[in-house]
Length: 404
Ligand SMILES: *Cc1c(COP(=O)(O)O)cnc(C)c1O
Image 1 (tube, protein in one colour):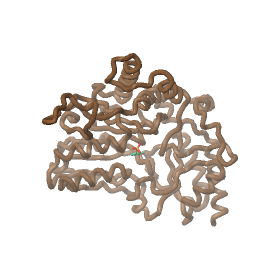
Image 2 (cartoon, rainbow, N blue to C red):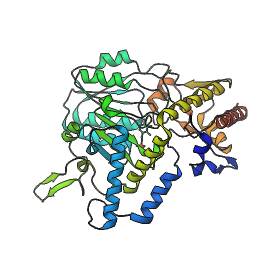
Image 3 (cartoon, protein in one colour):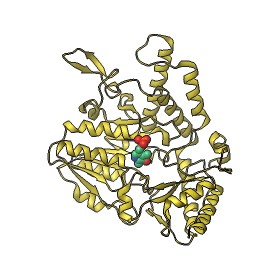
Image 4 (cartoon, rainbow, N blue to C red):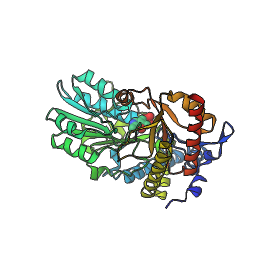
């Protein structure tokens, strides 16, 4: 069981007011809030040992390097990677996906096929389209159904020996649907395809085990996991990371440089050109410690309680429709009020201190499927409460009254 009132004290931002009302933060699927221990780690870094890593013999540089590599080990342990050098620290999910998509340019030929799911974030659609343009590979899409779940029978039919890569998120940021990634990975491997899972939306709720999933690539962002923005990870199986060429050239990623030829550094440095987000990486490790100290099972159970409560309360509002009704979903509720534009509802509830997201949530194909311009999305985290959901429901009722 979670002691939510105690947890809330860890997040200074939850004390603030917005438009004269206590903040109710329900935009956790876009970014999570930051606990004091993570803020302290950031302040400590810049106050005490800010230095560039890997290059210096001086004390500060060594302290920073040690802290950064300890963070990498924490991330390795959290995701259960076999080796620390299979963890590439990146600027986030988008960057991680682009490393893989660019790397595959040399591995694909015309007529090869890439399968993506209909539930993808734009960051997981555009890089593959660009890859197809470069290579002549063909993009295939696993369609979704009315509930917002993937049509797995169609997926099985799309798979063939032409399939080289399969990409899907674990959890849809727009609808909260949990995709059956174990099955997706296994079936892809049966035809010899590699799989990349976008865990940006699942990591805040579910602790993944990349070895038991047997996934080839796994990506996520720290800022959805109580960490800072601008840092994330690319996990790749060693054999795959060795096969992929480097993404960017620069310092840190080389072994020998002459004007005739450069040889690349080994993993993970081959993919970490330039000075990284040192403080961000260290703070990412602290954020994982924090979330593990609460426990992911307790987090998921409590968030599910919030989901059930929020769904019930919102559905009591006449004319409110929820999109994404799969049985397997996390604490994301995407909805609309009759034909009122989501933006108008979002603006009114903001005046009442409630932060929700409105729009297409970087997943326009899903909105096209439902033939809507967007939704209002409330996404709950373990530091939210049922009382806050009551405030949301009251503010939605008020918006409905004002707009209809
Ligand atoms: C947030 C999110 C992304 C993008 O993450 P960035 O940190 O912006 O790179 C990608 N996929 C999913 C499912 C997300 O929720």
